[in-house]
Image 1 (cartoon, one colour):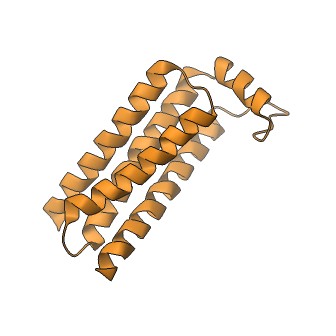
Image 2: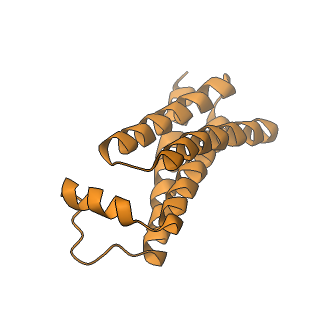
Length: 133
């Protein structure tokens, strides 16, 4: 049981780290404007209306890659109940993504693709992890 709990925790951490890395790469390619303050909601909302599509696509890629890697590593660590472990990791990352979409206004297409990407990434990570395990 403890190994499965550890699998969920490590899966979530790996997923969050991968999301952070891919988003950081996106910020290198699409730098934030000068004077951008992520703690000022008005500035963030204004930036989201002018945000390049490529920058949004990097966020989608980050969420899908994070849920894939989190689900995959969780399945590799888990002892049994592989699907449940991966789904728990995916649901946590989905909750974080939905929270992000609620706190920061995103285009509708982004929200739909973001949720689909998290589901697809988790499913793919789970499926490939189960094959390897």
